[in-house]
Length: 396
Image 1 (cartoon, helix red, strand yellow):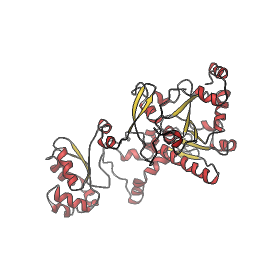
Image 2 (cartoon, one colour):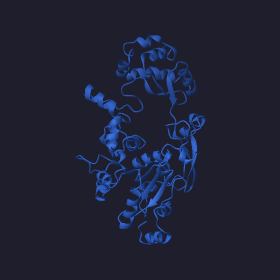
Image 3 (tube, one colour):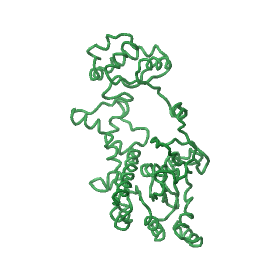
Image 4 (cartoon, helix red, strand yellow):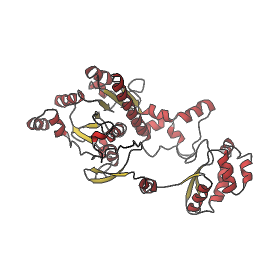
């Protein structure tokens, strides 16, 4: 593994009071690139994501995914001693990230404005549900709720059953924007000397991803239909039955459609049929179009169907499971797997998606609760006796 000093964010210190997914996802990406991330947790239980499940050697699958390469420091922030330690950390930190409950940061004097008055070089990053201002600023927001409020759930799933996306997409979107916002703020500070605060709301992050259906609805008069695994505005696009399973295919333009009709369906006249000659017509006659395709694909086993689609250069894929993903030849063939230690034993972990030439991201252990408390306090000048006193007082 490359040394931390070789990584792009080596020398950057991030202090984070974080829970669940959005903020930890942002800070883990900073840690991947070499930032020192000090994760402040409650002494009694820590980040509540630690207890979502126990599937990964006794650890939570969410926590293992989101918290490698971090240092866990336990502090009781309701105690004077705990707050004093936090202030000492913030006085030399580069970035502070928090996704506390609405209003909690301001009550603790940890809002961006207060922090920048005390520490002008610090970059605060607030991650919230609906923003720090506005009529919904005091509302809690979890991933499912944001998927519902943003309209995403109305677009997802089969026609008869609105569904949420199967991963925490609102949290992930917010974490990505927090990460990119922090990188932008670090660049701005490095080039201008000005440290700018970053604010990300889950609702607004997912709202950005709703751009296409939002425009379609506002200017088309109706929102896209809910069509399961198909595409509301492209056809054919989605799963089709084979003799032994399912194949996924996507046709993006009329040239591909013409080749598909000739080489796969065996009838080039279908390409010029008024019901199917252009994409909007195929969408309007989706059921008839799908029936024609299904009649053909049912005669082929999945491997033969995929081979035929490849021959005609039609984008295709399998309807895989999570287990299929874990053994996918693309990941193995590109050497995407690494190993990470957890308190219960080693696990596999994927390389981050953005590849920087010559840079091997960090894959340091997932920390046990409070694993780095004594070491961090020692760095701050606390003696062994002082640390024992803090522990006796339940301040750490």
